[in-house]
Amino acid sequence: MDQLPAITLPGATIEILKARCATCSMHQLCLPMGLDMGDMDKLDKIIGRRRRVAKGDVLFRIGDPFSSLYAIRLGHFKTYQINAGGEEQVTGFQMGGELLGMDAISTDKHYCSAMALEDSEVCEIPFASLEQLLVDMPTLLRHFHRMMSQEITREQSVMLLLGNMQASQRFAAFLVNLASRYEARGYSATAFQLRMSREDIGNYLGLTIESISRLLNKFKKLGLLEVANRELRVLDLPRLKAITAGTEPCG
Amino acid sequence: MDQLPAITLPGATIEILKARCATCSMHQLCLPMGLDMGDMDKLDKIIGRRRRVAKGDVLFRIGDPFSSLYAIRLGHFKTYQINAGGEEQVTGFQMGGELLGMDAISTDKHYCSAMALEDSEVCEIPFASLEQLLVDMPTLLRHFHRMMSQEITREQSVMLLLGNMQASQRFAAFLVNLASRYEARGYSATAFQLRMSREDIGNYLGLTIESISRLLNKFKKLGLLEVANRELRVLDLPRLKAITAGTEPCG
DNA sequence: CGTGAATTTGACTGACATCAACTCAGGTGG
DNA sequence: CCACCTGAGTTGATGTCAGTCAAATTCACG
Image (tube, rainbow over all chains, first blue to last red; front, side, top):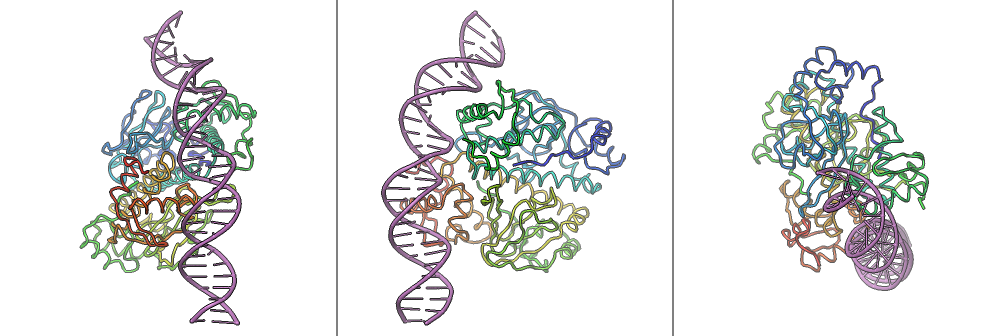
């Protein structure tokens, strides 16, 4: 389940890149190492303006024509599909530095919807321009392929989770994943806010809100975490990891 | 669940491409329209030799260093992950014309294993060479991105399946998907062989072999299909689709 | 402070898993 | 050629994890 941290550069380099990228300081497309200053300028040119997305607003919807990818600058999103019965299935939660919309490339239509879980900000990246740019920038090309591939592996992990994990394993895996992503971004791995509702979490994990509520309580009783509404503090990350792995029986 | 047919060219064009591509007549990388003859030659050059993979043999294993993608020329594969407890989770079944190994690009290590379900044949495509080639061939670049994106959407469909479908819906979806893929390849959509064991099917769908067996029987009794061992004949595809969608209650 | 939505808690239910016995197909060797 | 063997698949009885339903409680926001 552990997702590789999207950002693996030494802090100093990140700062440099941040400073360089005029419109969009955070997103991953700025991160491949070895971009020279000329390359950076080119990248800056194609990145569209920043766009604010208010909490609850939909950035794109299933079936919308595809024209751009979106790099999350700030905030959190959920992506979800709608099944034939009209019910949602949450397919992922995305945060700053992650890229939205890659599923739309194959058919030129968005295959899922993306909704902001809080007031957020994205950079629009017109895909046609990006693809032209990739031709001139092998480093960026490489990086882009890695990002698409990473989305594939992320989804495989979720398949593993949904396919053969118990409820408590799923929930532990979810928490461990969040922790590692926040850590990779320089935030605390052990204290963070759940940006999504219990309903979204349950939906994502193939469980009901009631189950999520019970699991939170169980983990609290086991001394694994503290919760107050959406404020969460992880007290025993190693044990959570053990539960994810199935090593720890988890009462 | 419906996966877009990987091949959408008019038959005549496919035939032309087949004729041109010396080492590998079938795989999708040959399919982007608009490749001129020079491009085709270049593509031919980087495609490694065909490689036979006997039934039960593993093409690559989790953790293997990544160097090549594999285009399936002939036969069927399953891809699977191993969880912490050592159990398998089947993440997909692949057939002729599909590409294996795209998940490995992000970390330079294979993230799943691939096993031949029958005697098969693949073309090895060294990724470094391919990436160089992509720079000179925008059409191929586009196509490659579409293929990666398609893998993302495929996995999203599986997440939907595992996340909020009942057992009978899952199984119906599985059959409908197979039918559409065979149809796209010019085979019968209603009569085909299950190349994978009940165990693999169950594992893929998050169910047990016993459940698969019971579902086969149930569908047989409902007049939806005929089964004899692995030989399968679909009698009522529309109704199977309705069950997938959740429209049909499915006794 | 009040209202509706979100969350929690408890009792009950059901879908699918588990366990176990059995059948069948296909391959092997005498 | 057939008896045997092995692994795959089927069928039935029972168990259980998480879902469903319902009510209580807390939270968010005007």
